[in-house]
Amino acid sequence: MLEYEFETIDCDSGGGYSLFGGFGLETSGHQEAIRRRGLDGWRYAGFVPRKQRAEGFVETIDLIFEREAPGE
Image (cartoon, rainbow, N blue to C red; front, side):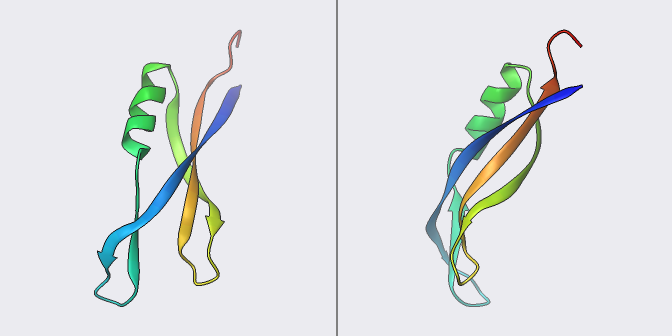
């Protein structure tokens, strides 16, 4: 059986203007979080938007991590 944990990551406006209009958003800290969790035996499984503006810009995401449950 697998167990799951979630880690919230902020997206910052600062990615500059998109060629298609509007501001770009970039995440900060996601690579460090994935590496750190990997050292603890967690596997990166994906992400879901956690907070999103009405215009569609994602402000925060949850990184999803999974691993075999202890004793399984």
